[in-house]
Image 1 (tube, rainbow, N blue to C red):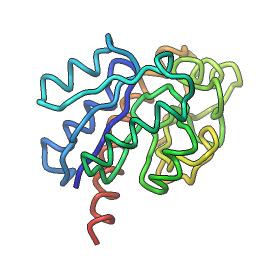
Image 2: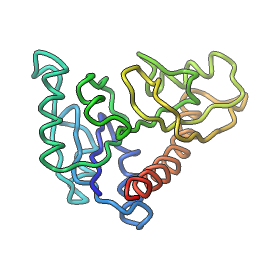
Image 3: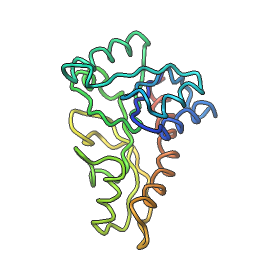
Length: 195
């Protein structure tokens, strides 16, 4: 089974999937990394672990659909079974969502459906959670559909929001959970796909 990981930043969630594969938890191969820009640390992680990486920048294309057409061609050529969005900040075009229906998962740093949707990513999510006075937060792995963070929820992990938490400290707490939840979910999905 082959996995493609999509990332836009440092790639700590990507690293958790790499670790999951290398420890034998995930019985699949990470075949490639799709990066949204050339200078992100996720690419360094890919190099270190012998994973091919490809950069697709939206600004190099007339539309998102066109860019994802090229990405789909590459994924088909590489016979990818599962796509994992690990901090990928580009909204997927309908063509790739349709082509890989129920085979694209995303990790989001809140307990969806709360604090999801367009513009809700990274530290912004944690700032919104703190501002709202929520007592708990966490992360969600969900299938990707045509909406933003609206796909079927697969699994969640919770953290307590304490009174002295800042957006930054909450982000750290949630990240720790992300790094445990994502590899477990990917491992389970791969097992199910093999049946």
